[in-house]
Length: 290
Image (cartoon, rainbow, N blue to C red; front, side, top):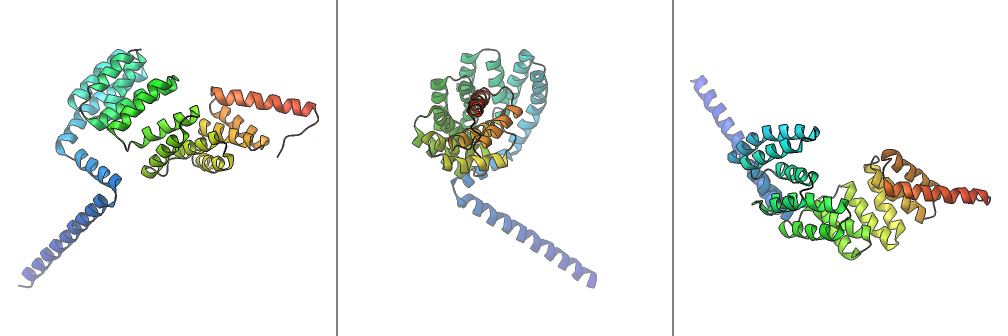
């Protein structure tokens, strides 16, 4: 009799614990879902990714992705393309597969074909991520008009794509154009992902282009502290110190940028110019300002 009562109590206790766990999960789900739009989007994405069919698709695509990455490492673009097309076929929602396939086509100088491929991606979010690859490549090629047009397409498909918001805003800051628009996009990106050093740097560069060097310094120094091995950030910090008249600090940061990335063109150019100025100052009997 006592054994039966103990068993019943254990079952009741188990049910009670399960009920608490389920209730906590429901409350947490409700809290996350209703917190803000970004949280709702995150929760919807999580639920989609946990669907059994999605999991099965990802598992089937994984083998193709792994082999494709090896082919890319060997610069076997034809084999990589073939494998990635298989990956997108078995898992049409696989962002990595579409992004890599887009990159592989561009590496083969098939830009128009890459754009056509991306235009046919059915999933809006996945399409936006693949377009972002093209936008960033166009930016690196300094094809500003093409990059701007594609960034706009990305944001039409996915207005809360933080990377696109930041990269587009940073490009405008680099060009010194539409700085109010650039700042608004970067600040929106920071609301979505507030702890990104690259985003802090982008905002600092907007202030730099406005001539607000002290405000620029605050944001870029914060970025460099978080990511000290990023040559672009060190270059930006050096340029800001230069504008503030702190030439010794500017030299230090520019030299560090070149040390991290010896091929950084802007950092090399700025460092050469500043070192030449310092030589001329020494010849005139002047010293570096500290």
